[in-house]
Image (tube, rainbow, N blue to C red; front, side, top):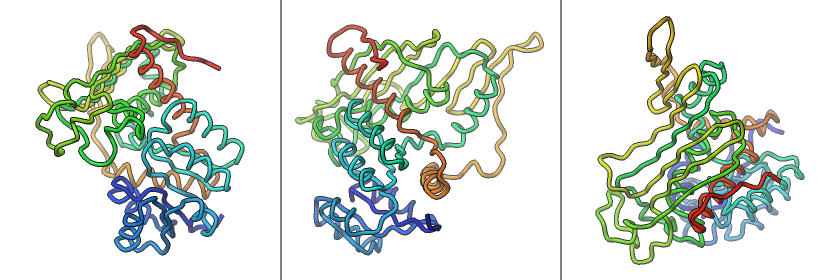
Length: 350
């Protein structure tokens, strides 16, 4: 593998233009040499705006004609699995935007393709790269919290419904607030907890505010064709006696938008946003929070790209492994299934 990776992009929409393409172009180990999108106008705009040498409307043609080392998949969720599998089968490394796929079945197929190809498949759960997340991982791994038995995860927006793209289209995305926003926090919580094995999920989803023309700081969405959930809540039971409460929203009548992950263990507790540790020592209750050294301000987008690039060049595993991202998809599927049937559902361990 050469020191300079030749990378192609599939998808020239908002996330590619706003974050992924500029981020990879800043990495001095990368050449962004091609981009593919089914919309010719989007391809032409990306080629001009970012100085990308070659554009295609068929990603398969790009895979065949360009001497790529890797691709970054930035399409709607419906296309994550087929494009990623095609790239892996072509012998390319893949960074795929989150969530991994429309469902856990497709995610499993992606994992199998990665194993068969011997190439890296990384899912863009960038919250793991945040400074508070990496610090929390170190603290939890040290055993300072003891045995973790309760996890609380909240990603709540008072009003934050995406008004662009296909975010409210169920066929294209598979879901709403849970798969767009909640998966970031769910993935981070699972990773910090050491990826416990889920056994049972009781969940409920609803779309009560997204179907109305409510005030939304992010612009007016198509409320008359709102097909996905704007709120989801779940209780998840894991092997070993650990439990998780999860709640996520795009629109909810609350005082303020917020996101939080907290852990309670036998020896201490921890909040991630902002990072704080709680314990009882020396006959006292104590609260601890960090004083950060320089370096905290490194952007998670930059660190995610560097993680993927270094994994490809050096041949080591990336921070986000496909098996872990697949587990997120399993839990999401179970939340939807539980909401639909009105009862708790078991998670298949096969």
